[in-house]
Image 1 (cartoon, one colour):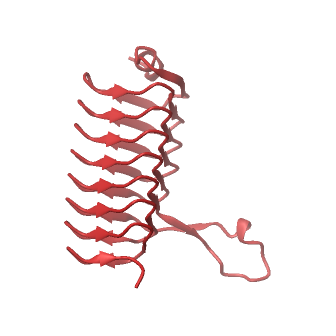
Image 2 (cartoon, rainbow, N blue to C red):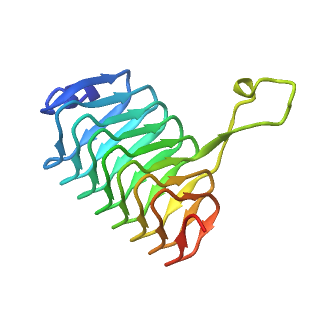
Length: 190
């Protein structure tokens, strides 16, 4: 069965575009009104049973993959973009409203983790090697991001390339993380 025929059966989806990408939505998954799915060539979107995707959310697999496990929740007006690599959201994860996840190298969020509203997770940064060339032509460098099982990330926090939050880690509201955060450790302004 082609990706478009599967997407055509989803209620509430405003737009579904596919050019030979793969989209699989398990029975029992719920997509809110205005959800937009874009699956480009080489892209893949998999939504597990019981997953809930909020109104106005955009899932864009532009050569990478987005995998939402059973029972996870993605809040309203969130945006998940897999330009390359994979965005893997494990069972029972809850992403608040307005979260942004953009992957070039890969983003993995462990089971039972909770993200507040407006959290940003971006696994790449611009390369700034030659001061005589514009940054836009120097490309980007990606480093995978891993959030361990049961981590808590406060509202409006930012997680950058190479971040590794251990299981049970806590990142404060508005904090930024890159590198490694210990279990139970609080990240945030000092």
